[in-house]
Image (cartoon, rainbow, N blue to C red; front, top):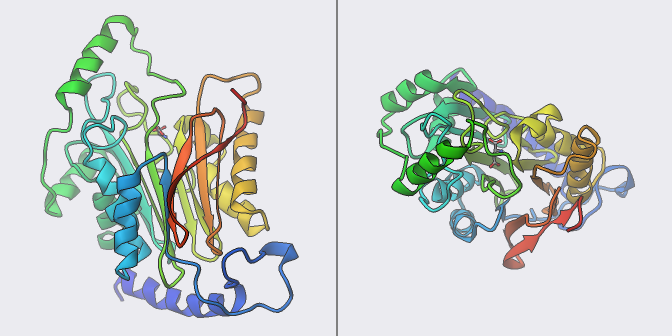
Length: 332
Ligand code: ASP
């Protein structure tokens, strides 16, 4: 049987169990404190949220969800908005290049059945998230990298194009004059988009896409396309995604950690805070990098936490569309 069909069938089976066991409506308690009698209620979806203040991206995701589309289609359509936005210099078109001047893109996607696809170091394609989805749906693999990923994208019908814009090229030329070839690690230049969506049926998906750390060493891969680090979704529990210094997110497998903490009963907010605390415990006294996490649980509750002030997330749900400033570990 085709892999997708097989997984779809098995996910239908577990979704039935899930409905009976855990759907408790928005604001319902989870974990050890949850009441003994599970109650059946409508899904708290749709919900769409993403890292940073990307209103157009959440608007797009919401329009897919609102029309009855799946969470998977919504996250893909949502993050594509930023991949095509030349003004966002840390995602897709116009992304800052590596130190040798190549725009190399990392992206991943996860569906409610736990399928995932990822591309790393992809060059010359506008929508790495869509290539990652094809890896998920049309290959027996999870990750394709570099030249292999590009050959696959071409074969799959994606068009090759130049992604280094004049503005990003000029900045890179300037950087070369003074940089000693050190990547830029700072607390501002992290506009990676990670998105989590819940559809009307209550199913969850996520996507994360980035051009990575500005002026990184050629071949460097951050957290964003690493399943469990930059993104993790478990349709029984919730999802989490990250932005910021990928090396530190990878070291704690941040998004997986947050989902597992939610499974143990933490709210999305508590879980994001613990995720950041784990990272800071390994980096005592260090304040030169930023990391932000966002999370969504099966009850439609959301949370966010970051190291420095300045991080926010965009949320679109039944209560409207807004930008929510994140709580922070370090106070300004
Ligand atoms: N997380 C990304 C990376 O480390 C960077 C970012 O969020 O801007 O590649």
